[in-house]
Image 1 (cartoon, each protein chain N blue to C red):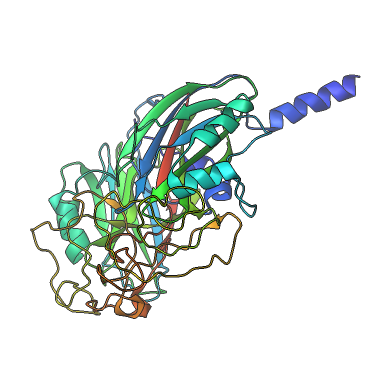
Image 2 (tube, rainbow over the protein chains, first blue to last red):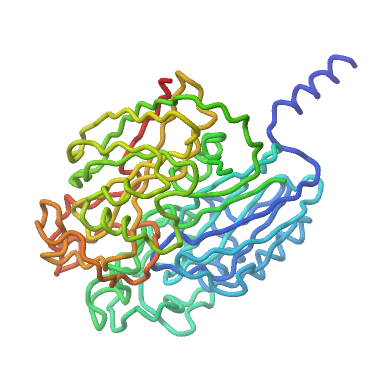
Amino acid sequence: MKLSTISLLLGASMTSQLAFAQDIDIKVQNLSQGLYFTPLVIAAHNDSGYLFELGQSASGELQAMAEGGDISGLVNIANSIGANVIENPAAGLLAPAAHTSASVMTTDGNMYLSVSAMILPSNDGFVGLDRWPIPAAAGTYHIYLNAYDAGTEANNELVVDGSGAPGVLGIPAAPGMDAGSGGSGVTSTEQNTMVHVHRGNLGDDDLTSGHSDLDNTVHRWLNPVAKLTVTVK
Amino acid sequence: MKTYHPLIQPALALAFTGLLLGCGSDSSDTPTPVSISTTASYHISATNLTNSQPLSPFLVTLHQSGGLWQVGETASNALEILAEGGDSSALAANAEVMASVADGAPLMPGESSEQVLSYQGEAHLFSFVAMLVNTNDAFTGLTQLDLQSLAVGDSIDLQLPVYDAGTEANTERAGTIPGPADGGEGYNGSRDDKLDVVTMHPGVVSADDGLSQSVLLQQHKFANPVVTLTITRQE
């Protein structure tokens, strides 16, 4: 009895996390020069859930977010496992270099933080954080986020009205109003249909024809694309 | 009091992002230490990790407050002068800079250089900055890194990304890039970038990768990180 008690205590002391409620502030900054983030979903959740998993097929809910910016499905998933959900803290698009903040009191057991939002203009690119263990120690923590590809749509880089609906090929919008038209399409296939690191937009230097409707001096990026600042109080 | 926390948990950050990048200027509450005037001396070693982007002679500084830039904010004129032309003297002249050292020569790809930065007194906020000279207005560095908790004899390793000063459009045209790829203009006070704020750099495109007007070629492309930096407290 005593031995098992001791090992439990040791086990508890070796983890950096806290199973109890925590008061945290979260700031998300768009670090890019030419990308917009659609509404963000931020969830503090237990170890039974996730918004996305690298190397796995995207869920229908993830696909809806990554192709069209619709986070309602991911919010439902998070709510279904008792997550503390911050939905659309920027009240719309998060512009290049802009930031948004929110606070949350986590429920006991919600020890992980996940984030996602579509990036525009892209076919099915999103910025994400997958199950970051919320530290027990009070302090300010910085996490740099990469751009991922949901693997659900070919990156043809053509701006097409209405293509935000899952399965409709195209980029639904370029909010900076700086994309072209008349492209022939970069590709019609997606080699890796699992969630993976986005290879970046290609773009071209011809806004009226060429392969891509995107501008190669505006719509490319290098990771990281976002910075998350988490303050554990 | 400014604090820089990725150092406290690099393993976590690495595991979830694949990259640990020095930057930023973030606040948190930490106890103010008892002020004892001591001499701090830091040995700085920097290596250029790019393929063909010489770095302008790097500048290292110590501040009591403030920094050299902030992502999401408009670049100072001093930062613009560095990012467009590689001249760090205006940044070093900033009143908040308590101590600074500029390296003596450009840091070529694959090369390393070392400097020692010392200050007697309370100035713990460290910055490093250098231009990628074969670009319009790209620079690498970190700013407001709090070295207060770095013990004598200890060192930290950092990998630095590329920022865009937001002060000059990334046209890559002949005559706009001061480095050897072009030999064009450095600093120009006009601001014509898409967004007049500091952001992460999207990378250079180059003529080989689809920007026909570009004087840059495939060898000038880069990806993050571009510098590895080791800071060792000697005193």
